Image (cartoon, rainbow, N blue to C red; front, side, top):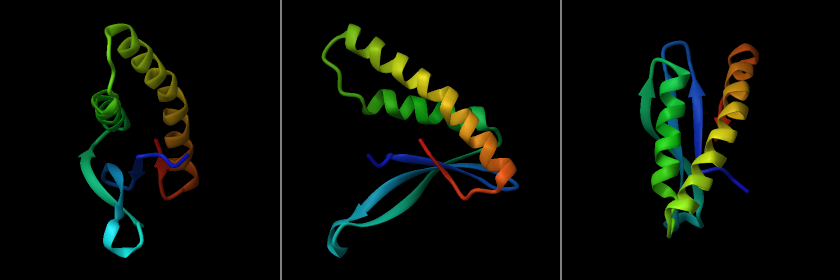
Length: 94
């Protein structure tokens, strides 16, 4: 399953991007920059907030489960981003 967001790290910024599809060009994929941060933590907080808002839930119990799942993912994202900075990968999808 393709991820909706990715984080790009360059020498000045940590950039959060969202995957979009061009309906006029056979669903051609492209990325839109949503936010720029000075820290990985700021970018991850943004993604967590977006994922919580994207989660359509019917009750509080389901929302708690969604938030717990997002926080589990944080550890993997943080590790991947740290490895990306040392290996100069282009982006990490989150």
